[in-house]
Image 1 (cartoon, rainbow, N blue to C red):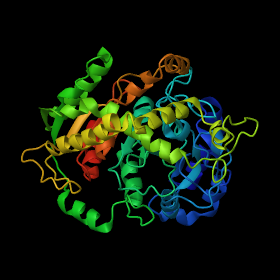
Image 2 (cartoon, rainbow, N blue to C red):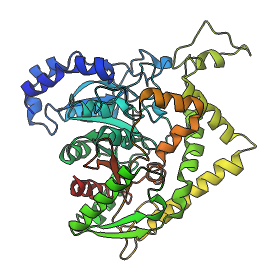
Image 3 (cartoon, rainbow, N blue to C red):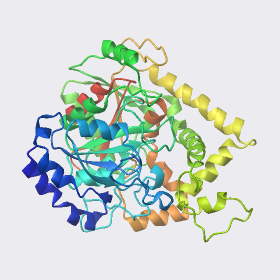
Image 4 (cartoon, rainbow, N blue to C red):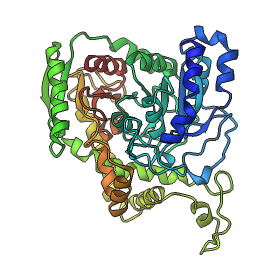
Length: 464
């Protein structure tokens, strides 16, 4: 992209920010960077504009995680993702808004206020979360791509609601060094854009080993993946029986069926498949993720990290209560849930059982995919499927007031939004939300075997 075109888009950011509340901070040096770095144009992401979710650390802009607890916190280093993007010529225009610490599915749980959906400029409609600002920035066309994080659907759900592409790679393909942890066995850096070509360019830049992140795939594992993953002209597509879209609107059901028919018309084969433990994915996720979050959030004690509310006295004369006063309600809810799941009365009946069910789910995925899983040692299934297809969300987005009202009356209601996205997260599989085509704010999800990220991206092209 020419620097002149990019600068023109930068000039639209103040108006977009005022209307949709996309960013938590804006890079005032972005225009100068474009003017003074003509050599960027020849780099892989030369002069492409991007937004960075505000739970990924940057030296030049604050990293707040959408929380008063970290308001105005400046990291002493850049995350690996930010470093790689800068080396590749991308220009970060700002940090994007999010649900606090990545916890939420509406984009309303931020100390900076809710991000609203650019698809509905005349209404206050949720854009989804937790990567709300990242989705809105792409939808509003002020960036070429954005970076989010996906723990249980936090890239894919807002991508669906914003009618953009939202890609969650296989766990470990992109470094998490410098990503503020929510649930470390699930957190995955994701990418949003309007074209698969842009997603592929960015993924190629970020798909690197990193010694600073022990969960990032090493060179040996990447070599194994390269040896077994090959491009396919015709796909065997599985439709999970457990994901039959019961309970969704007729419009959503029609959109889903239309995508299946479009893929059949292009010569791909469609098969019903059964993955019984998919039905357990949502409760397993909300057992494990809050338990991991409790550990990760314990570092915000007001001494090493985080602000303390000095006006609030602790009832037990410790620093704990004042340091937690700045957490929002959803984060507090998940801390309570996580502590319960790890308590002596619940640990064996809930937490350990959830870990076992997670393993069973991974094994069931291995039992239907043609490609081997290099992490589990599965050999792949003869005549197995290449990808799975489902909806990305159980409904279309509602107004922010409706969302907040539902959340207040019954906080569990919003968790149901993750029903289609949590299985891929628990198994570490690559998955992408693709705009359905006929209706806005509707996404179709593609999932692939672990490491088969390029097949997932190529399958997205077949839908668009």
